[in-house]
Image 1 (cartoon, rainbow, N blue to C red):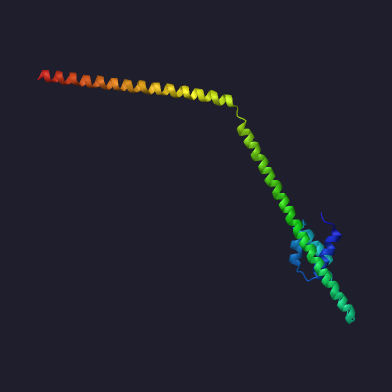
Image 2: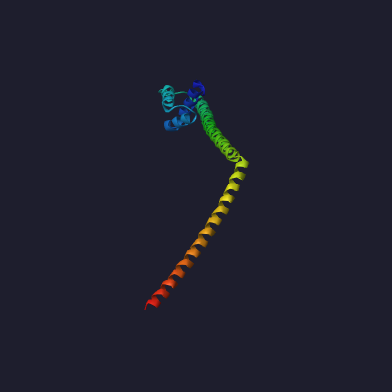
Length: 165
């Protein structure tokens, strides 16, 4: 978590630089604060600032200071944004690593199937295929035999009916 005083100084510079409040809130949320915390920090920093009339020399010196503050504020805002992006990239990298590890575990589990069982199963499947072919040929032979018997019976019946007439 970022130091609260650093956050308050950064918000003060951002306000002095003329950056709008929604942008400041968005930057603080990107830096890791909750929306409520960001609003509280902005409210604490945001106080009416008096506009004293000062001589021209002091005014130009203040203008230079304001410009420095604007540049520093923009640099800090960019740094906060970069930090946020790096944090998000790190989280995604960790997620990708986790997924990769899980994939490797699945690959190991799949490849851990013992080979002897595969050989035994393959042998049994081959044996069943041979028996199935044998049963199929016996069935065909029986079918052919029954067709021959049926044809013979028809011929006999036809001859018997021809003799009756």
